[in-house]
Length: 192
Image (tube, rainbow, N blue to C red; front, side):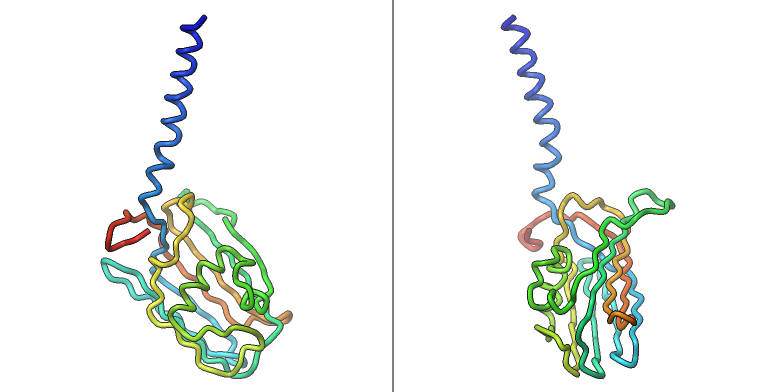
């Protein structure tokens, strides 16, 4: 009887180690997006926008320029993330959420994915802090994609992230970022 319990205990321990080993291995990796292409549309009545990716063999960065033409308030924002896990198949969005953009500016933590992006965008330019969004040139140069840390459960795959901002009746800004989610090894140069 004791022999059976010992074997069962050893088998359970071996199974637990087998399951936890890949999870522990992910701790030394960082999951980041690499943006390859961007399509941006804006409503010229409200703003002019451009988004340009810059990729080198060692890093991926994005420039975003928003030239606001008139004060804007009562905005909503839509985040939709598609991840192409199985090539060539139609997939439902992995993440799809609509939020009050003005509330988001006051408290970015209400939207976890948005908060990750907001933090890096804010570090690289003059982010408005509240609504109404005033007439101004908002420029964000060299937003490093390595700073946008995604949870490690995201698969390495191609993605499309759509960020849309609009009023109740019309869209003001729509940006679609196409790229790849990659895991990179943490080193002294690439901190986790």
